Length: 226
Image 1 (cartoon, rainbow, N blue to C red):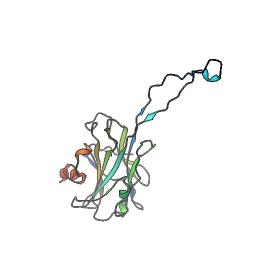
Image 2 (tube, rainbow, N blue to C red):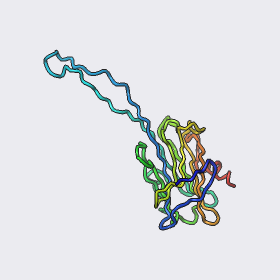
Image 3 (cartoon, helix red, strand yellow):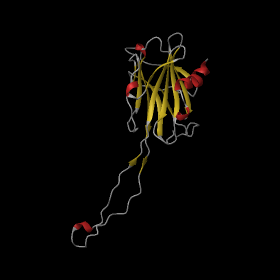
Image 4 (cartoon, helix red, strand yellow):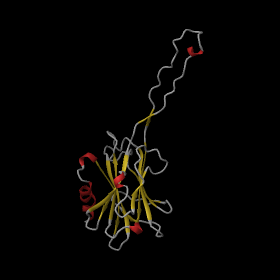
């Protein structure tokens, strides 16, 4: 059962402690479908009686589906809050340097029944210098915002049981980020005792206005915790 954590609140990660202690962070969304206007029924201009093609023919037109591309990105920070690595759908960034954080791959359609993109984290195999993981969703398709995409949500789940630990909506619900193109969704961090926690950040931005996401996270997420 997922936790109810409002924006700015934290909760401990309740993950399975066996094996690799894997958790998954996923985003999902649905693409609106637009049915174009039906064209007039087609009638052959052959002379009547010359063939059976002079009957009215029903021309069926399928759905026209525009691409709505969201990317899930994980920024990796050390104890000094310095950006040291990143995982994204880009092939060169699918896996972090340790091999314990990896991406499911790019999804540009949003038609999967579950998560459209996932980042898996094997907590037991993380190097000691990794202390903070910050997850961002960025809309890559042109001229789209979170208001344009349906049923957009983020979740944190136990990798062994697939049970949700946290789930919340990102778009199309009237929040202040509806006209934005990026969201700093959540952070997962290790406290001085080595216990992992998660925080619902839910800070929306316009991606093209951000020159450096590492510095933006330091300002908007970590500065509030210092």
